[in-house]
Length: 196
Image (cartoon, rainbow, N blue to C red):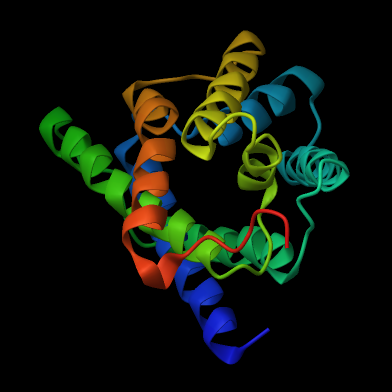
């Protein structure tokens, strides 16, 4: 593992954290994975962090059994992204008007896509959501397997009492194809995370 790949991993995770913070600040629905964790937390009464760790571990192990090996990125992604989100949400408030909230949701999409594509392209291992999607590629291409993982998470979370919104649907339907496009079009983000 080269220093360049580690730097790409860390910078991309910060970018991803910024994207998630933008999405959360817009308060129009979070990604499907977070919706699922929130729903399980509501239904079980367990702390969010405990549910997040347990579900993340299950997804990473499932992906590993299908040939997507964990690595440094598997650990760094949730930690760096989580710290970035916490730092930004502590200083950035939600905008007041609906137009500003919608704009924030639209701006969040390319930031999220760049963060996910960048950290996956580092080839250092995938976090839970991306690992679960990569585990099914093939036969299902990542752009669609990622949408299925996000959509399934949102559906389960909604069924268990979590809220969904326009931001949730933006992530479900657009983020996977956007990440796939970046990975194919930008040589610096060549995907090395599949089955290394």
